[in-house]
Amino acid sequence: MSSSRLKVAFVLTSGFMMVEAVAGWWTGSLALMSDAGHMLTDSATLGVALWTSSISNRPADEDHSLGHGRAEVLGAALTASGLVVLAIFIAFEAVHRIQSPSPVAAGGMMGVAVLGLILNLAMAALLARGEGINNRAALLNVMGDALGSVGAIVAGALIAWKGWLLADPIVSIVIAGLICMGALRVLREVVDVLMQAVPPNLDLVALRRDMGALEGVTSLHDLHVWTLRPGQEVVSVHVVMGPAGDCTSTTYAVEEVVRRYLPRAHVTVQTEHFQPPSHDPSQGAPTSGV
Image (spheres, rainbow, N blue to C red):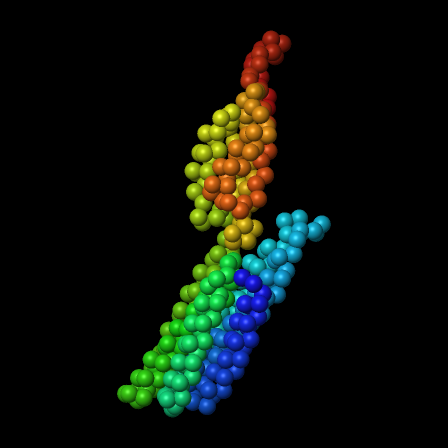
């Protein structure tokens, strides 16, 4: 996603967040104020995305031989952690409102929520064109805002129609639950990347089988696959060939197999020739070497 889109999204989100916070205070709506808090997190998310985007695109240097791509992952971790904290705060405030209901100006609440829904849908369309875990975290926040706006509209309608003040905190709890679930999904992906787990879309058994089936390959070991950042994987493997095997052609063939599974992977192939067992009469037993 281009920096210009992130900047536009950041300005729009920050501006409407202040509008929604004032409206939530004026109408007495916890749903609006919680949504404003969520939009504050969105603003922080987009700010982090702008910052980490500039860092992650820096080229490799002497201190970072594989580049700075993990900055994107760290940014997503910060964003998701902030969302979990926000969800807990919203739920806590909602429980307090259930115990002590407060009056809500339903008309103003619904009007601001409709404006928020329109803005969030436009923002989602903008962010949906981007890539990367950081962008997905930002999109998750915006979609959570859109759901929050829908919830505020529903709560406002119930209050205006039935005078049911509990609709406001109950909707807030639902919003908090949705926010927390989405944030935990992002955190799980972040943990997988930092723990160098095999990419979830890769069948490692099939990859090993296809490498081992290549002409001239007798065996392979130390096959490792991990994610530098979502969409950029790293593969390393040690390939053993027969005595007549060609190192260059085998390396190219292995790389081609990897590209079928992971088109953007950084691949390192180490080759060696297998030496058949030889008998040394002085030792009394066959020996072999690699």
